[in-house]
Length: 586
Image (cartoon, rainbow, N blue to C red; front, side):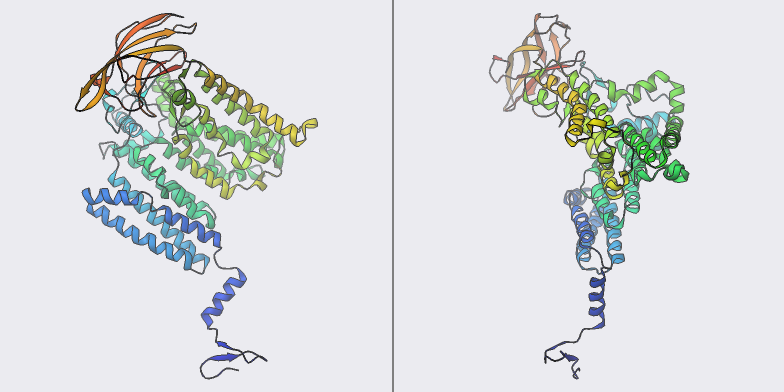
């Protein structure tokens, strides 16, 4: 029974409690039936919301000094972040939480747009792409053209080569420049290229958000926009961001491609996007063979070898035709220049840079005479991983969007951009490519090697050659024995060097052409000028060099090094810069 105040009595106990209202009862029913949002979903939404704080204060501070209207929008985004944080933990229905996810995405898009308005000058990639777009509009050749006037500022770095030069040419496939060309007709600056890449990032974010299951959507917002990593690449004008946008529909649920033996319109669209991505930036090239092998294995397990091969061939042909269509004009206009340009990152022998294993020889030892073995190791690792994909696709299939980037950890250029720019594809695979998709995928029989230990030994054998190459490169002795005598001066209370006398002994049996630079941290300076000394140093020969820093003065820090590099073979020797008139190489 209930009294006049809405209090019920527990049957047979005399216990009294407040009457349950209709709304509370409905909430209890929601919890009981599990129709409300899962706690995992709430967590994803909350983490994405928190990620929007990263870098927002710096953007607001900059905007307050140069663009108050942008600062006002950022302030409004702060309010949106706080509201999203509250709603993520309080809404009671799945639909409501999905709306919160959408609000988080809209807030992230607004913040990235504000970031572009504050920073759209671009780095060397953006500047080169904008210049290529300008040349396209004027009907001029794009590839094989040197544009040295674009470089030299603090923002626009130069890619130096181990042969003592630098690269001033456009070294990317043409799609991003083609997309930037009509924008450049209106916006006559690097902002044309950075606008294309920023829009590409926003499109890829919205597309990934749309294609992923609801519980994963806010994770897409965080990875693409919230952590502040990918937006900076977009502001800098990296063509890889364009490739990323095209690869998103390729990777999401990729094992479904060609199911039943027919590509259909979706499969054809995925193949065209893959070809277009390969026409935007070279990173897509490394993903392509893994996807094709995985697709063949999945389809062969379903359809048999002949039909699987036919489906994979149609998919490959569609991608190749799309790639060819984008490149056709440039390939016909200047075949040699075009081919050299799109292969440039693979052939230019750029100076060491990055966070990978090459740092052993660059940062932690006196150098190596066998740097080429890092490149050999990277290539062998790529081949080994492709072999492992064929043999163990049921285990490695879910990670096929991550495996390609591991090869760069062994390369002489292993900067984190090669890893970071494609991380949304990792998320796409985690959310839409479960291990069960490969349960029936074809993989070769192992016969007597079917045991776990035997398979582990086989997998190790596939990557061992690559690791041996790294050992050879890292253990290689420096090719030169250097003795340095610095000419020190004090300018504006700073001790620095105006020239260094270098005594170099070639300890190898190969003629070397050394080029000199300095470094104080992870990057090398511009090339020093060889005032006196031979251009090449014969086997086991000794020579005296006098080298001067760019601008005639180089301030000395606690750890300043002189490096001597050669392009063929690739070698590096590092010596500690003396703080007294005479010192020996470490």
